[in-house]
Image: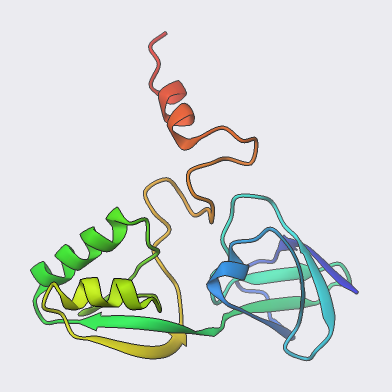
Length: 164
């Protein structure tokens, strides 16, 4: 099995592809398969998110390009930036991962969220597309407010702002 334990330089030439949905690209430990079908294991530094186009280094010297797999998504589109900002606010308030594009928002397919966004007078379409949501204000981690050592995000922020 091919082991992948580090990232490769952005300008490295990839000879393999690793097609992963967003949820899998948030994991630092993962057993999966390359596009060729070869089994591989990811053992990357915790706390990062793989993005489409990232390059990884296999333990045998091969360079693997990460490809964001098409996923079942919903897309809300509008020419009105205020409408999109309102929808992004309401989705974010529910801790939903959102991809922000020029004139549209994408989020994982969920009929309840789709109805909520439609209730904001935005048309919502069901699509299949790669998903690259925003990393968030606290960094590019896939977790929900917790560090690898179990400390909550609030504890880290509090420590950062403590007075000497």
